[in-house]
Length: 373
Picture 1 (spheres, rainbow, N blue to C red):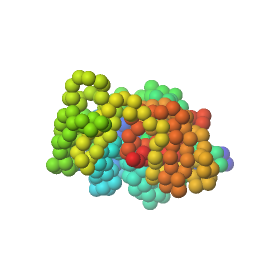
Picture 2: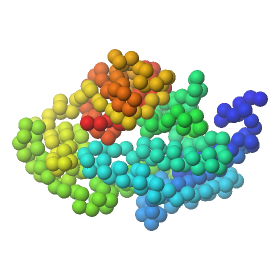
Picture 3: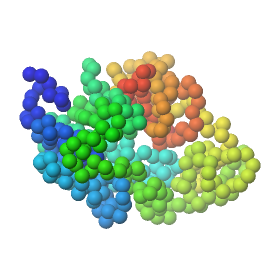
Picture 4: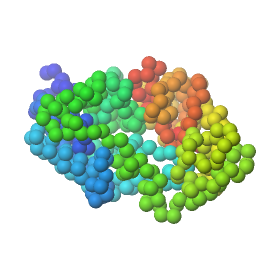
C-alpha cells in the first residue's frame, strides 16, 4: 500500500493526527487540510497564561481570542478540539527562565524554550496518550526522509522557522509533521484558509512574544521580579564612568540608541555585568567576535557529535534569527559543549541567543546550541 501524505502505510481515516492549534492561520490551515484529506484529526490548543491578561492583548498567540478562533475552525471542519491548561508548565519551563536570564544580562529566546519544553515535550506526550500516529504543527520548516527523518529549512526563506526549532530532538522529529514547510509563500497559506471558509484567513500574524505585550520585555520582568530593576553605572571599557542607567534589563548587547551618555565617539553596549549592575560600553569594533562558545547542544546531523574530528567540520551557522547563515567551523568539546569559529567576525553575538548549525548548502538543519559566556 502506498504511503499517505503523512508517511504512514494506511488510509488517512485510520491515521490519527493531533494538530497543535494556536488559533492563528497557519495551524488552522494544517488542521483543515488534514481533515479535508480524511485524517482522524484532533485539535489541541494550549492555554499558556492567564485569560484576563491574555484577552487584553491583541495579536498574541494562545490568548482567549485565539482559543475561540481555534474552536471555530474545528467546528467548521468537523473534528474534536480540546483546550489544555498549561499555565503552570509554561510558567515553570519558559517564563521563569526568561526572567532570570534577562536579570543575569543574557538575551533569552523563550519561543525556542516553549517549543522544546512545552509543545514538543508535554504536548507531544499528550498526543501519544491520545493514540495519535503523529503530531502536526503550523511551523514553516520541512521534514524530509533520508536514512532517518531530517530537518530542512522551509521552502519560503522569509517564513523559515528553523532557527527556533534547532533544539528539536531526533525522537521528536520522528513523530512530528510540518505540512506547511513546502509552501512558497504565506499567500498560499491564506488562500488555503479561504478555500476552507476559515474565519482566520485574514487574521494578522502575531509579532510579539506571546506573554510580552507590545514588545516591552522590561515591563514584564518588573512584574515577574519586583525590585529587580536596580539602577547602576554606565562604564566605558577603559574604566571611565559615563553615566547611570535604570536597570541592566533595559539594555542589549550591540545597543547604541537610548544610552543617554551624549556626544563624542559612537558607543555601543559591549557587555552586561548583571552582578555589578553595570552596563559596559565601547567602540563598535569591540562587538565583533569570531569565537562563539556553546553549551546545551542538540545534534541532528549524521552520527554522534562526539564522533566529529577534533579539528572540527565546516558548516554554516546563524547567531541571530534575522541573519543569514555564515561560514564557520564547529569543534565539539565533549557531548554537550562546542566552540564555533566564524570565518568572518560577527557583531552582537550575545549570551542567551542560539547558534544554529546548517549543512554547507544551507538547507539541512544540523542542530545547534546556546551561546554562553
